[in-house]
Amino acid sequence: MGQRRTPSLPVSRSSSGSAKPLAELERVEQHRVGCLTAGRAGSLGQKEDDVALATTWGTGQVLLDILWFFLLFIEIWLMISIFIDLFRRKDMKGWQKALWVIGIILVPLIGILVYLVIYGNEMKVHALQEDQQNEQAVRNYIRWAAGSSSSPADELTRLADLRDRGVITEDEFQKLKDRIVHAGA
Image (cartoon, rainbow, N blue to C red; front, side, top):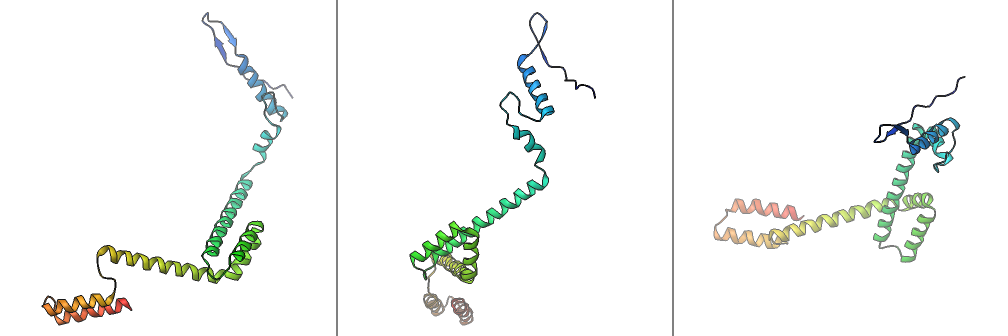
């Protein structure tokens, strides 16, 4: 086998036109060639593992790392969901909640699985109750913002007044009354 030939180095031209090699570029090139041929660190402070890492970290490792990141994300999401449910519960005492939090933090996988097995259905019920309360609050706000009365009895009284004054007919009164009664039920 023959010797390896290094490419020529860039040169700097002085004002007189003479070519002289750049010492810094030469040192970097020697370092690069040394690292490639010897597979070890050179004189610029590069670690030995840097070159090996780039050659051994393949597609499979990247996909595995993405999977682990995804699983970590799911674990954190479940922990936050459980903590929200824990502090929303009214049937547990404070020390029980504290024990659950400590258990989930110290042994996350087992703590999460045990909590989901024991209280999984109750988490769903709590979430549905919260959604219903939020929906009712939004409806109340819309009624308040629109300026309409909040009770069906007030609306029926207003309709009866409109009928008595002749603004609406008896048939219109019955249709609107049925709508109010069915909406309140």
